[in-house]
Every structure is written in structure tokens, then in C-alpha cells.
Length: 556
Image (cartoon, rainbow, N blue to C red; front, side):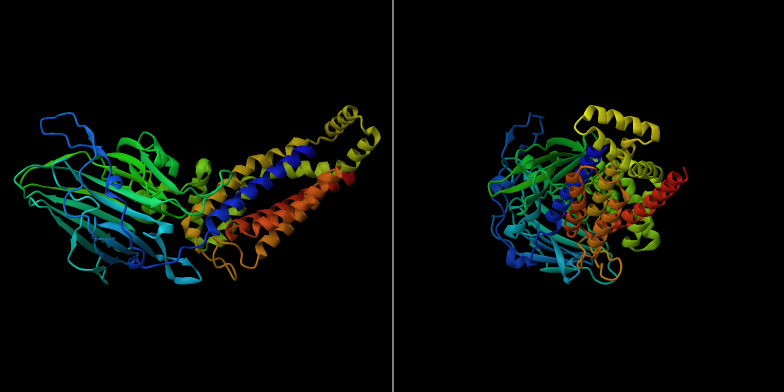
């Protein structure tokens, strides 16, 4: 019993250490300084490598396509100009060279509560935080087409969504030497992080124009790298399709080109803690998903369309959605099937998803995430009340038997076989089961880990206040009040449990509250709040059970 309990406690301590390491990875990373697009603008990656390599456009006679690198044609690859687009939710910088989104500020998400005027920068061309969204067209080998290296023309240098205006259109125009024309139209909607992108192809040339559209995300690997043993929020590429469902691709996978398949009704994205940039094609339209690594150390994930033949005098429009914003599950689910899965709860999604739904429902009533966590803690304790009761009863019985167990050890000394037999007889006669105190702890541990991921991944808790000094439940308690209360509650719990007869084990257990206090000092205050509330409820339940058993023992 003592060894099993010690192993469980050490496992819990190790789990806590992993969670602390994960929090360090996610929160202690220095927030990027906000720079203007003009200050961070740098030439884009070489067209030879960043343009996707796709099969040449199928000839009209149905010849088998051959794999070839498309020719970058159209306007010279000269430097473009930056235009700014401002809505109520987004501020973007778009380079007219390729119509590439080179900077995205999320206007409703400050970097921190201490810097409310400094908005979170999701995308930029800063060398330390490189992340851009590119798109373009690919023609046949002997046809010009505007890739993300070609220069477009904008009618103005800045666009702003005005009061009372529900949508904002930003058109960039490219005209080829043969009269072909492409209008790249970004459509912004009030109150949304969704951007609808259209590439409108108008063929005014005398010959058929055969083109594909591609869209891709290019980013560098974050400077801070996690350890393989850390439980940390995933940063990298993800894709979804009806067959394979949700798949993650780390940067090594992207560089190796492990994403390479045709998909209908899917999407690709780059995710990080709290935020995501996703490319969602229209439903029922096939796309070839791909990934690659570039010589400059950047990584690409994207999709391109089948070849489309645009007859002379005809036109064709490629459509799709770019989402740049928080991992808001409701908004994401409305854009594409499975897109809400970018809120990555890991292997415990089956538990975490219902937890999130319950938490959201409670918060919709009380309107405060701190009180929501406390109410949810009470509900969790109610669900596991009987299991906890079994555990605490076993601990209380073991506590009552501790003097008799110690007497057996003193009597039999080093004769472990006779001592174990005598202890088993004692447990059987008293109705105590050492394992019954451990199994409930094992059953509840996955729920705690799942709740950790819910609190860590839910953007709703980012900068959400509770009361008094707790202004942000997603960061550590600034005055360490909750961690100290957590450590004190663990100490009280230990006093209610039977002390292990081994002096070394007893010292180790006595040190755990101090160890956990130090670790939890750097945990998100929302998670520490849950742990404190859970401990207080556990102490109350265990104290009542222990008192009742001691009364029963005294009566006999």
C-alpha cells in the first residue's frame, strides 16, 4: 500500500512537472515586439522554391500531365508596395507583390493586459517571427500567370471598414502581356476574422488560358523549442480531410513533404497556442494538399486546384476562405467541418471536449471564468463523490490501523514474508483494502489532465479576470496567493492521510507540498484555482469520513 501510494504521488508530481514545463513553454516566451509592416518588410523567398511544384496543366487533348516546375511569368519580380487594411477585428499589411498578407494584428487581442494598446501580432515578416499567407496562379509552361512573386496594382494605399459598413472589398489587379487579367479580391466582414479571397480570372487573350490556383502559408519555426518530454501546445501544420480526419505535421514533417494528397472537403492550417491561420477551400471542390521545406529555413503548407481551362473571352473565379484569428470553436466550426479541432486537446479530446462545453455553458450563465471554474470543480467532485468516498474510507481505515501495522513490523522485523502475511490477515479482518484508496486516484487523473488542456487551449480564458488581484486566469498569480493556498491545502490533506511507516517515505511526502507550491507558482492561475478548490472540497469530505470512522472505532 505504501509503495503504491508513493508511486502514485510521484507520478502526480511528475505530471505536475510536465504541466509546469508546458506552461513555461507557452507563457514565459517573450512576447514579440510590435513593429510596423514597413519596418519588417523583407524580400520574400525565392520564387524557384516557394512556388509549389505541380504537374503541368493537362492539355486539351487529355495528354498525361508531366511533373515540372512552373515558369514564373507575368510582371517582373520587382518590389511591391505595402497597403494597409483595417477592420474592427483585423489590421493587415498586404504586399502588392503577389498580394501576400505579410502582417496581421488582432485588434481585439492585446499582447497583455498591461499593454492594452499593443495588439497581438499573428503574422509578420520579422525574421524572428516569420509567418505570411501567399497565393497565386500557375499557368502552362508556355503561359504567363501571376504567382505570389508578380506585382499587382491597388487603387489606394489604405483601406478601412467605416462605421455602418458591413463589408470591405480590397481589389488587387494584374494584367498580362496578352491581355489576360486577374483581380485578387479580399472580402472583409465586420466582426469576423474570416477573410474571403477570390482570384477572378478574365481571359481577354486570343488563346485558351489554362491555370491552377494555389494558396499556402509560409512560416519560420518559433525560436523557443519545446522538449520532447513536455506537454506543450502544438505549433506547426495541421490538415483535415473526411478520410484521415485531423492530422498534425510538425516542422520536420512539413520539410519532408509528408503532406501530399488530393482532398475534397478538407482544409490546411498553421496553429499555435490560442491562434490559427487556416485555408479552407469551397465544399465539394478537390484540392491537392502539400507541404515542403525551403532553403531559407521556412516551412510551407498549402493546397492547389486542378487545372482550369478558361476560354478566350471567358472568366473563372477561384474562391476560398482565409481565417486569421483566435481558436474560437463556434466560429471555426461554421467555416469548415472539423476546423474547430485546431483547439488541440491532445489524446484526451474525448474527455476535454465535453468539459469545454460544460464550462462554456456555465460561463454563459455566470459571466465570469473564475466562478465558472469553481462551479465546475463542485460538479466534478459531485461526479466522483462515491469514488472519492471509497478512497477516503480506505485511507481512514488505514490511518486507524497504522499503530497495529507498526506493531507487526516491530514484531517480525526483517522477516518480510511473515510480516506481509500478518498484514494481509489484519486487513482482511478489519475490512480494509489498501488498493481501494489508490484506484480512485488513478481514475480521476485523466480528468485532471483533460481539464488542464481545456484551460490551456481555450482562448476564452486568455486575459479573462476573476476577482481582486486575479486579472488574467491564463497567467500566473502575480502575488502567489493561490499557489500558497494550494500548498497549504496539500499539507492539510497529508495530515488526514495515514503516515507511511518508512521514515524516508514520510520525509518525501512531507516535502511534496513545498515542491508543488513552487511548481504551481508559475502555473496559470485558473488551473491553480481549480486545484485549490478541489483540495478544499476533498479535505472537507475526507475530514467528515475520517471523523465518522474514528467515532465508529471508538464505539467498538
